[in-house]
Amino acid sequence: MSDRATLLARLQEGRDWDLAVIGGGAVGLGVALDAAVRGFSVALVESHDFAQGTSSRATKLAHGGVRYLAQGDIGLVREALHERTALLHNAPHVAQRLPFVMPAYQWWERGFYGAGLKMYDALAGRQGLGGTEWLGAARTQTLLPGVNMHGPGGVHGRLHGGVRYWDGQFDDARLALLLARTALARGALVLNHCAATGLLHENGQVRGVQVQDRETGAAASLRARCVVNAAGVWVDAVRAMDRVAEAAAPPPMVAPSQGVHLVVDRAFLPGDHALLVPKTTDGRVLFAVPWLGKTILGTTDTPRQDLAREPAPFAEEVAFILGESARYLARAPQRSDVRSVWVGLRPLVRPQGDSSDTKALSREHTVLVAPSGLVTVTGGKWTTYRSMAEDVLARAMARGLLPHKPGGVTAQLALLGSAPGRPLSEPPGEHLYGSEAAALRQLPGATNWLWRDAESGRGALSEAMVRFAVRFEMARSVEDVLARRCRVLFLDAAEAARLAEPVAAIVAEELGHGRPADVTDFQALAAQYQRLP
Ligand SMILES: Cc1cc2nc3c(=O)[nH]c(=O)nc-3n(C[C@H](O)[C@H](O)[C@H](O)COP(=O)(O)OP(=O)(O)OC[C@H]3O[C@@H](n4cnc5c(N)ncnc54)[C@H](O)[C@@H]3O)c2cc1C
Image (cartoon, rainbow, N blue to C red; front, side):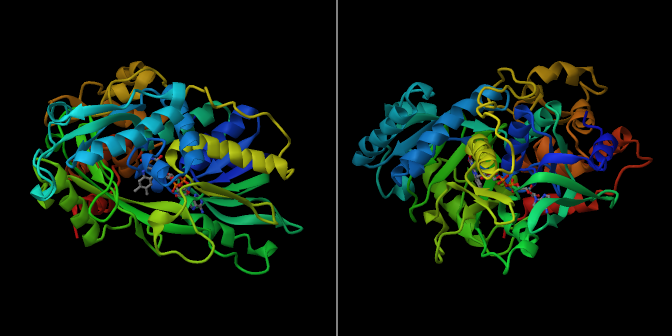
């Protein structure tokens, strides 16, 4: 089903599609899956790899957004809580509930934050993942063994206690792959490394997309009655292709905001609870989250004008994350402790007028239908990708671009491999494959471990996983494998660099290439993920 030559041949058939989707991140893939399940014919192109943009660089929290509750955005929180349930239910092998503890160092913090979180529970209602609890100091330390007992910088004295609440976490890139593959299984055509290079117009209306395969250079025209622009922070570049139908270049929709994550060893935050600091010195939120055998620290919210594919962190962002982590963790992570640093661009919807404070921008999504019929969607968050997709299709049907077909079809749609999994705090391994683990074990090299988790000694990346990535998960390169099929680049960039050559050899064998691809570019990328400004 995922054979590239077959997919390319289908792309070049010259047929008419109901829907063409530009962008293979959370939102575009969500649209393609929903449309396919409703019975529409749909083709999606992704210029790089699935989730190579923002959708592999999230904090990986399936959450209602406690922070948005504080901003009074009840509707957004309620919707996200509902979506959190659907996500955890439909892909339990890559999305699970996760307990969080907010440590309290001042007498009023426990009551104040606890009351807010009780409201969060109330909004979740029966969809709650566990009740909020007030904790004493000893219990807080038991649940968060890495917490600083002495308070941030000793300013506020000792730990008073804390509040525990529940949210979810997931493996963002693997979830995107599951959306792509489930969409394929439902009849959609989804293709990575194939860019939209132009729009087809007829009488001022968008009637399709010109695409180009980045591997062979082959071009094709996809005729479609509805074109969805789900290009994340890059939506404005696609809207610029629509200029034929519009007098002037449309004003930009996106105000990108950069978020940095630092990954350190699990030893900095042992246990299976995440730590949330609701208000850092400059009013931001800081997370320390156990994920795939490591600890993710982050994030930041820095306005950015350029739209780099691999944005680099700013020195102040790294200093902020390390500085604040040092205030709340018993063992302060140093620069030399950072195993990987990765940066994502939030596609925040630009407000009327100008705002330089991206923290204040709405996290809600926007769907805009241009006079040409081009449907652009951006904003929102990973957690709400499914409801965003429903919204996109509802708008397209309301505008008569698509015939009406009832929605709600993905609310309880199990994604490929759906089966209860082990906690995502554990190192990566076969458990991330759910019911597909049996097929994985049949492949050559199932017990040939290329990478083991240093702490537990458990196998984290096998030769078979690399083969599986190429055969079934549409991986085309070492980067596709090590960044998004297996998350080594995000967990330990030096290990990813070490693995590049052995992985290249297996990828070449699977692709039927005579010799392994040059890994120089990947080594440079892995070096960037190790470099702090
Ligand atoms: C730092 C950070 C932390 C976050 N944390 C969370 C979190 O914990 N929980 C949560 O729910 N959300 C979180 N988010 C938000 C979430 O990650 C994003 O809202 C979501 O991933 C956006 O998905 P998207 O599909 O719109 O964009 P993208 O994932 O960027 O997808 C757009 C795709 O379009 C492709 N594209 C662009 N141009 C073309 C073209 N011409 N032809 C073909 N393809 C094209 C790109 O290559 C890209 O893959 C976070 C975001 C950031 C930045």
